[in-house]
Structures are given as structure tokens and as C-alpha cells.
Image (cartoon, rainbow, N blue to C red; front, side):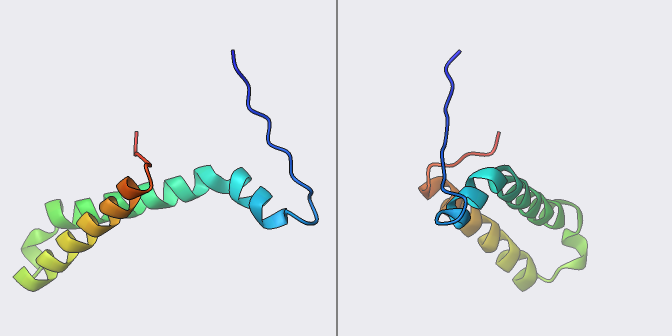
Length: 75
């Protein structure tokens, strides 16, 4: 099994270290936000005006596009 070891100077590279350590949390926030938008579009559409629905749909498309452009995936 291959291993990846990341080394950081905890003082000079603190921000980079925190990003590496907390990357999975950012992924979960992104996933939860995407699912929130999906649920609003799928299950709450009867409470939305057409303009609101379209805005949520465009927002989700843009959000997923940003994720895709960075080469990231939800799995």
C-alpha cells in the first residue's frame, strides 16, 4: 500500500497545514450545500416561485461547475 506523507512547519505553514487537515470538512460542507439545493429543488418546488426555482437551479449548476473545474468530485 502506498503512503503519502505531508510535512509542514507548524509555525510558518500553519494555514497550509490546516487546509490539509480539514480538507474533508470542506468536502462535507460542499456536499451538504449541494444536497440542500437539490432537496429544495426536488421537494420544496411547490413553495417556490418560478424565479426562485430558476435561481436555485442556476446556483446549483454554477456550484457544481466550480467543483468540476477544479477536478473535484463528489463520491
